[in-house]
Amino acid sequence: MDKICFLLDPDKKEVENVFNACVRLQDILDKSFLKQFVEYWVGGTGASGDEVRKWLEKLHDRKIGPRLIYPAKISQFVLGYQYVNYALVPYLLNWTDVKVFIYNLIGILISKLYKRKRLFGYLVMSNKSTVGKKVGARNLSNKNVIDIVKRFLNQSSSKVIYLEAGSGVKKPIEIGLVKEVSKIMKSYKKSTLIVGGGIKTSNKVKALFSAGADKLVIGTALEQESVEKSLKVMLNLLKPLKVNVKNNLNNKQGGIGVYGR
Image (cartoon, rainbow, N blue to C red; front, side, top):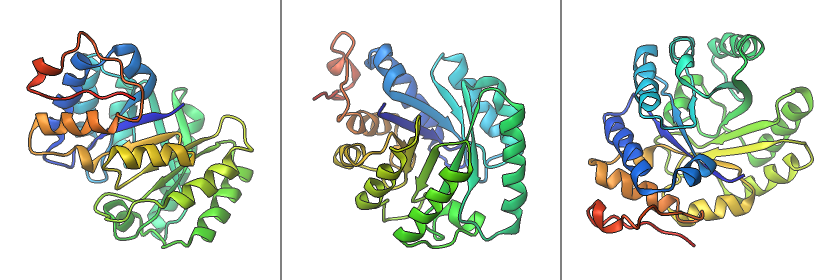
């Protein structure tokens, strides 16, 4: 099932605009469509547990979901877990910082103790991105990526892979690499391929879904200087999916267009 995952990053000053755009989205689009095709992720490499909890609680209070926590710290997970439908537990696959080894071990423990969670293999494709610098990501060739993905899928009960270009990186994940990884994952039942970073246009969304991605994570593109601009980006990125509009609200939202195929 193709899904767009809108990421609220408490590290960013525009997070409130992104949140308010998510609220407005509920008024514009049919809720059954949103439930089927959209997820709301909260997480940030530098955010405190309290900051992550705050935004998850705000989404929860507005009944906006499904809500997922994407934790970079244990405190984010512990404080935010009560407000989520599901928790993502990243297992970093191409790190050099020894602290990540401990993080991965804690992630495995969490995945065994908590019910609403999912462990996934996490590949940060650039050591120049914010998260790449944080974990000391190793630069990888496409062949390296394929080898790592195969090893993880063979050795882990999890069949979820997340390929992330990372915040601050100009070059998104290559379409050819997504196709290669997707081909491998199709041989496993209930596998999910997540792709994020540098996704800014509806054409890119369409191309990545066509290449075999199951979920696309959108973060930086949403971080605009106004709620209206953040909302326009959301609506544009949803164009490749079948959008159901409630009561034809285009003209009531300050000229914001809603698209479908």
